[in-house]
Image (tube, rainbow, N blue to C red; front, side, top):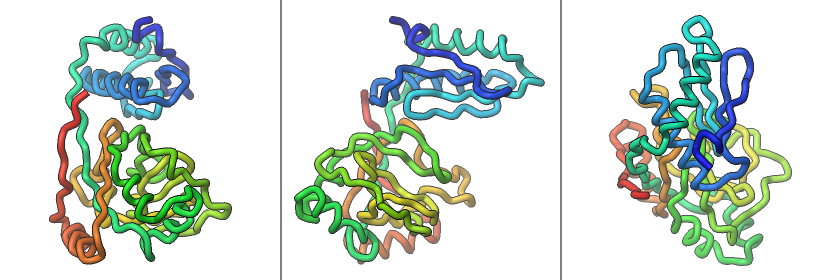
Length: 245
């Protein structure tokens, strides 16, 4: 089955087309999403306003005064037909420092008890993987991450918190993620990063993008404070590397 046969094009309102791949969440499907997103962006098609990737689909918003539905659908099908020819660069892996437990991770003890493991085990397991950023949503720059070990999965809070501090790292089911800004939320909080995932004053307000990876690393309180001070001044730079394949 070709990429064009896998994908389904659906009307989404009066100025968007949904390009939907298989109805499942998996790294290989998200790679198709990333390939299509980058290939389409490289075409610079006049009239496309925004390209929004998600777990298994891409929403293409367009201005009907510049391009009509039929013309855009034909262009999207052409991109899909040549998707195997698209050159996709290696993904970026972002190392994100985290202070686990204590006031910054008030639910770490619950996650440990729920999983039948020690807090140290939860930290070790959580910080051992490279997590795929499947999509951004909920709040600006909130990364929905895939690849968390099911051994430390934990249910959402029964009653969501009204305000969660920016940088909080949480678990909900088999997902983990980071709250970029202070907001309500119902995830179990196991730590906090001083890194600003969203800063409207930066040239690129959102730090990570869909298709990137995040690798958490545990830091102590002193290191957290040092990084927080640098982040506040805008001088902190996360360590990054490229992930092949």
